[in-house]
Image (cartoon, rainbow, N blue to C red; front, side, top):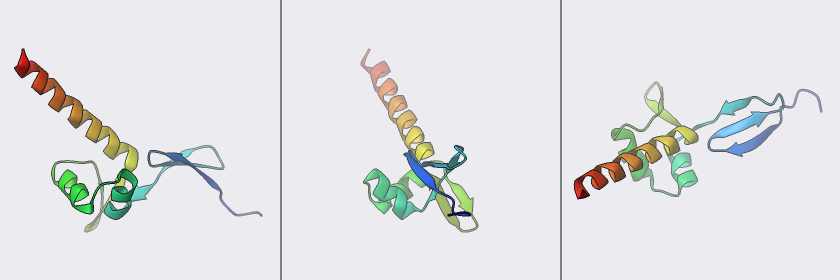
Amino acid sequence: MQGVRQETKLGDGFRESTTGAPTRELLTAEELAKALKVSKATVRLWQRQGAPHVPLGRLRRYVLAEVIEWHRERHLLRRQRRGSHAA
């Protein structure tokens, strides 16, 4: 079939097109919540706390890999702060 673009899911919010170039998939808050197995309220809280997002007018979209990385960095910072207080 000509003209049909095929994509392979790579995980972490990326897809690979038939050209082999990864593309970023923008997710809604609901889609992000389902992907991460958290509530939409948690996604909204993260957004208020600075989670990376793409503003589209009044809407917000998320790249799964960017949110995961943001969450990991926050988690590491909290652990480091706790460790420095214990010494």
